[in-house]
Image (cartoon, rainbow, N blue to C red; front, top):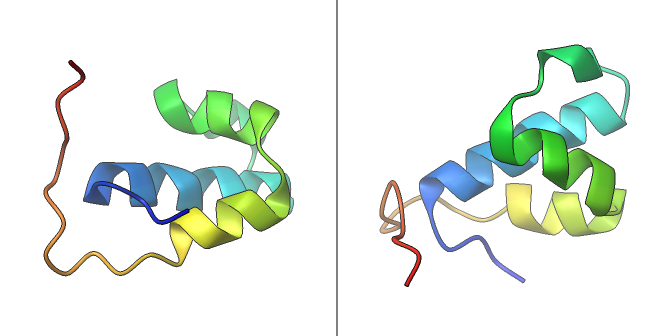
Length: 62
């Protein structure tokens, strides 16, 4: 499942880093904190590996 926006990709990268123990979980905020708790490492890898080229910075929720 590819990321829909650059912000989602960045949040997944931060969550993945915390899940692997490379950064402190206490440093996470917002979406990355909930992603770290609710997603597996493999799911986070898929989101974080999405290319940002052509992606909007944010996608509105409707």
